[in-house]
Length: 331
Image 1 (cartoon, rainbow, N blue to C red):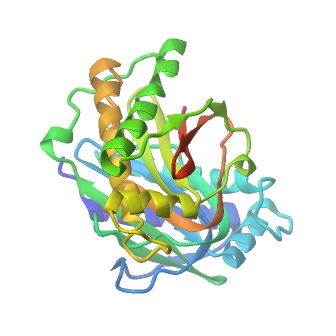
Image 2 (cartoon, rainbow, N blue to C red):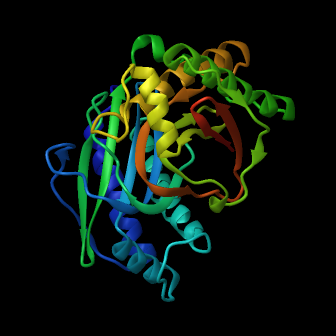
């Protein structure tokens, strides 16, 4: 069927309102949607991000909370006072996101959308911003509660015929399959930085991420990965000074601050890296995976949740502009 984008907007908003009512005993209402950029982007303290793919479209959804609103929701959810967001309670944030997105997926697929959702990323840190993108249209839906408003943000594009995967089938993954899954992302990262930025980058030893406190960054791009056999995500993250040096090389102009629009360079790199990885994963490894759309976040000392039951591998890269990280998560 032709995907009805408005149905997706409405169903995710409806699932968010229902989940807050059931899990947090909080009433909420959906306000009028608008295109991102019409109103100034507000900073937030915690977010849930997820990639979405279907037979005909790909995209991403973000849920962005300011601290005061989220702490009150978490207090209602857990039945005890919560005064700060940290690694001891971030699993509750992941649970809330999983319920919202799971409920929306079930309802949408009953309508015939055949939507798959990647693994949610839950972020916390200093004041964060999700910038307006020049690469794709984004729609914002405010959700109003008695504590204040928070925001749903959607980016959703129809797939080109060349991007569609025909007759995708589930397969059982072996340990060798899972080990081989990470290499195309490493090779794609090295190749993209060499061609686009003239940077030679070398991967360090990969390690399993065990805590959100083990890695932090100032700017990152996230993209969801889905297939019938696995779900996951890819993150490319930088400290601000490293990112500015990288973009200076990429664009041939020195930058010492982050002007509006400069964040889109992360999205461009992600699309190139994952386009390269997708060819290997699908044509050579037989995964039949699809990629969502990149979500960009910048802020101060951002940390991302490591969900129980999911494997996240952190791969440090070393270059003449400094160190940055790649994280690949799969279930």
